[in-house]
Image 1 (tube, helix red, strand yellow):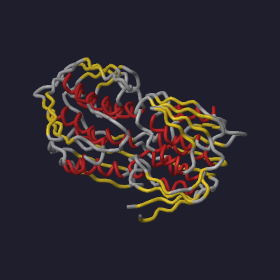
Image 2: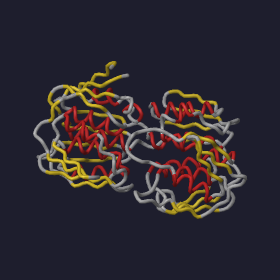
Image 3: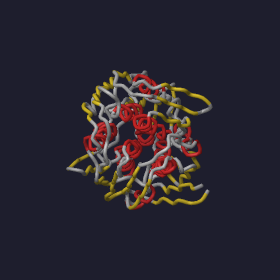
Image 4: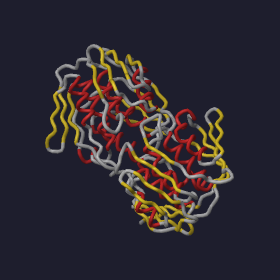
Length: 419
């Protein structure tokens, strides 16, 4: 098992290329199950979660070829049961349920694993499948869905903590081959949902309203193969913007979509940083003084929960009192204890972190609890005095393509060593 050593105090400057979106690529790869014809997906990031998904597809019978960020998949003959040993490692593996149900009218998938960031049930996914006419059974750690026929319906995916991105994608993939019209009310508006919809449309699906709260799907008899390029990863881009804010002279991100980053760019500007965008580039440079913030995580287009931990790392070293409230995953503050080990002054009050900025963080051994917490601890290490030892970095490899190498190219000093 690897660990990362971050030598603090190095200034960042230069250019970094952002990878394709993990959260887009996973359901898009799953969607290739909807057709027997070959599909080609480009700009697929090299991540452990992607490896798990491709392994699952291979176990289901797909022919998978991968080279230089491009994946070719042919799902001509497939089975409908996914193995527990792989599914347990990644929550997003649940997104194979929708396409298997849509094409084969049945699927059996183990309840998925993933990050430990609180309760993330798949009840909404299953409710959507039931609305389409599927019978759902949860037994022995497995979810089985079965439908002799899928029929379009009006489905509500609204919940207490906002819309579900994976649930929206899952139901959308099941509905594209259903008889009649499906209307998803309370759909997730995230760019990743739009990206999946665009791929499905390229395959011959009839979908309108992706990117809004209401998506309408007119079922078709079959889908065909297609080519698609995955959108840039807005969370990786946001993470590098925060890295530039924490210890950068001027950092420029390439191959991004600035529109997808506005919820991160806006508070960084409010905190005093200079940010400019031009086409597919975004640059960040320091202002005269950092200012504290009040942040609330909410679904897109609001401030993303996946950027909460990284902003906590920035605000820990920002003069004044900042308040960060988590409205999507209320228990997503496991990084707070580790930041406090580095000298951060954070008072956790339920789902709200009150952060009193300190002059200097100190390097310390810390433990990554989930994907975004891992990134936050690396970012905190950039501004700490001494060496920060981040353990359990397999979390970070799930969602960041070569983050240590990219930061080193900007001027950081980061080592990856065996634990």
